[in-house]
Image 1: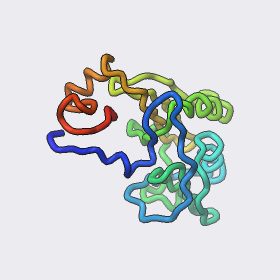
Image 2: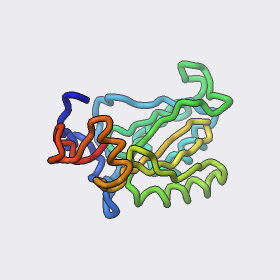
Image 3: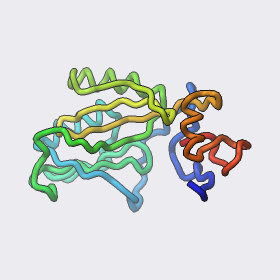
Length: 183
């Protein structure tokens, strides 16, 4: 991280804090810079879980083939029927790979409650990370490993701040760039 600069204005993620407010679902149409395609054997059940459990919206659907889901800008997921999937089927087991979505701290408890109401044993966490986030891991009906990660307020005297400083991420005025103390 020798050359970096503050580019937070590009992101829908609010500044971390106990009163951070999540943006509304983004309904604009844009060229997606990245997205996940997740095969499912039950498109309706999977879409219902992502919508009611995670708070995604159904941006549009192609009945029986695809549901384009979205939360914030740049948080797009395409659920496709197993027959439409490039790998020709939903995985039988949970993969080691995960897909992460930013959220705010105030969204974690309601997300855990909603997901557990839909699938009681699908949630692990929340847990705090060495890089200053609080994470919740959810296994979806189609066996995707999804992590919702909320940045915690930055405490310059915390072990997390020291972990970040060790890799060159420092708060404003402390040297190397202006990154507002966010990772």
